[in-house]
Image (tube, rainbow, N blue to C red; front, side, top):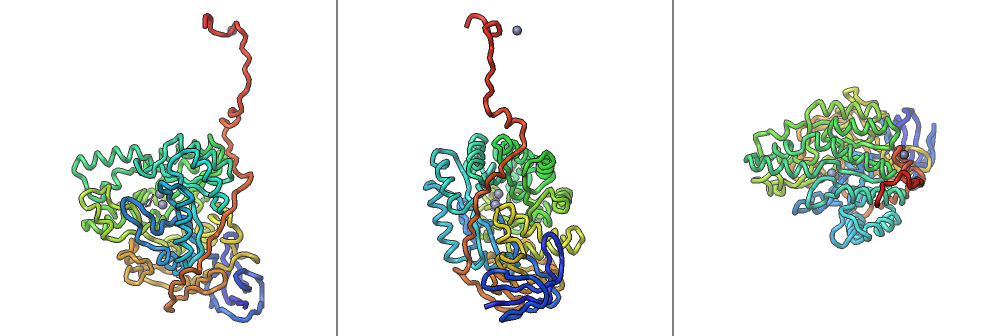
Length: 485
Ligand code: DUC
Ligand code: ZN
Ligand code: ZN
Ligand code: ZN
């Protein structure tokens, strides 16, 4: 069975051109003029872009005493409806370790997912067991390990643990990811604001200023350099963190930064709303920043010092948020955005002239496919690539509303935002799984695990410190030794 998409303009990360796309089975078979197939899909003048890849989700994540309400079933269907065809979720090991957690994540995903998916593994301590399990995890198609520098007493790792894990990543050909916020300073500031009687969601922002993110980002980058490994900083939200990434890249280090669509478009005034629920629903870490930080992130995407736009989709209901009604430190951290990432980025980025359509494709799909080593299976419109395609119509509009969203939570942080630019069709491996205006339904079990091989030979940082790692013999004659010892 083959399909030809006709009448569209292909927008890739590197160019824009008009051509037909022939799909055979799950793959793109040919791109050219006057192609023929069993079926025709009329793009009707719209753009055709590679399916979005959201590299940062937390579906059904056990966290802060509860579990994220978005399920694999609802979350992956929400993704497809917004033009995202692959999500990458974080496996959080419990006391039984990485492999047991990975089994549980794979089981949930395999049973429920409508979209394709891949997984990152979290490292939340260090031991011989961590050392050994990391190799097994890489063998199962995971080439990324996440480290939390925040959440003291829970997920946080210390510098010695991070250094050990980063070195292990270097040896295995894996990429370390970092949630970069200084967990010790945050814990101290949280206590300070609680003691002052500032218990509302605004104190969440006060307790996590940009400095804690800038400090941790610098530290993570230096630890990565000492370990001789590239590093990927998740949810880069402020100029201080962006500056550290820029500087490291200019030095020649492979350091990547990932702003979220939320940080690009929502600011810290969200925490000062008179309605407690409104502000608590927007509590996530790092918190939203003021407009100067937003400008820095947009500039980084245009200039290439930041590479990826993600969501950190970690959706809790209002009821779950209310656990923290007397104490902001107990508000489960997380916001949604999985189905809104592409339309909001197009509207606020491309429509405003901040990003070109090609840059839009780069930061929503192609760049992360390359970073995660799944390019050109994903993230590309090329013969042989998976036919994960979005017929993206820049004329379609809607007003974002929880009432019509696919996400199962009871609100949307983008409520009321008017977007221009929406998927008309989303294709996953050659099949139309979402059509604008039709009553498509989730297809649990259709999604497939995307395995990501290790990256041989790219894990070279440029530190001069590394040249000193191999011990050099120093011969000291007795004349130069202390006397009498
Ligand atoms: N930040 C959040 O807001 N939620 C999940 C984890 C994280 O780091
Ligand atoms: Zn995080
Ligand atoms: Zn996250
Ligand atoms: Zn001497």
